Length: 417
Image 1 (spheres, rainbow, N blue to C red):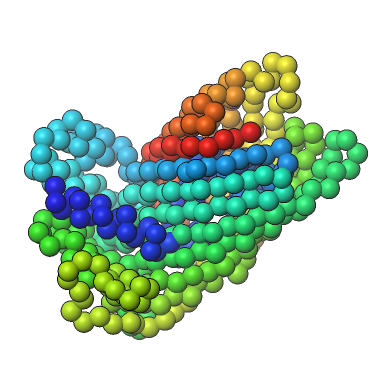
Image 2 (cartoon, rainbow, N blue to C red):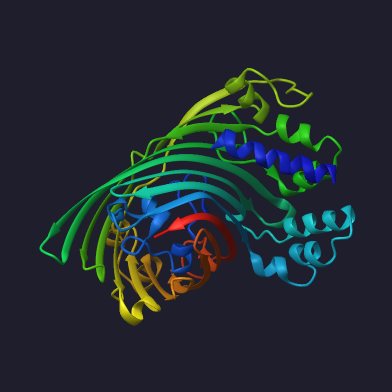
């Protein structure tokens, strides 16, 4: 149990110091259950907290929101984890001591497939939207994988903290037409493990077999703190948005996201060395044997231009008891029109989603994301909300190359109106 406590302590430490699914070189995007379960749509259909990252032009006076806070946990490759003998099956049904915890940990490692993928993601978010302004503080800790799979895989740890400010300018024409222009700026602090701290620095970490060795040692805490080289830096990306809305029944949206998405990074020989540079002290009784500051480097996370439409049932009457939202997005228009337009290209860039809301308390969602089905369910009890999402993402070049399913749970304290 001491090893489990040490790993948990490291995770708690990494989030506030370092800071969705995807590469550590991608733009930062929090995991939003509503958008993901509606097929990854959101450019015209987002509501509440996800607006700041989907399309800031959707901020409006009728969209009051605050979260204090929301917490989500996402597990990938969930089918393998819950099958008999899988990591979750052992943990939930056979957890009789440290031996079973070790078995569950080993099964988690063995479930990792070949190529690039995700293993686990945890997020904490605070948000506020009122009038034409929105603010949020988001933190995430992600575990990525790459390599040939199982114990031969490499585990990459990534942490983010993002401070966001969004503003919108709505212009109403007549009684029914509203045009809105919005902008959001994000200060993103990012850290991740790397393979080396000099030369051509690449995301890396430790092999899964080494992670098992770390886990089995009595000094696991000192090993994780003092033997993993890391990189830490920041970027200040900007999002721009536009929407046209007709009576909150039909919405068209455009969003140009991640302008100025260049990260300026500095590498360090270990997490403890990074902590020393930030605070002047070390964590724990053991310090790095050869603490060093490595090379600096930059990388650019690409921008995207997305378009979307949304249709909603009007408010009032029976629709307050059973409301329906339909959404469709075409993502990365710049990439879409630069490629030969084929059925595969359309499937890769197209997102479709639907939501059925019952008495504004129960929300049932479904969608298609790059050809894969996604599902979601929300219990909305005023200031307490629980979101459940199941979806499949494609990690290969073409649909069907490497699908990876996920299950996410989000618990939120706050208010949506």
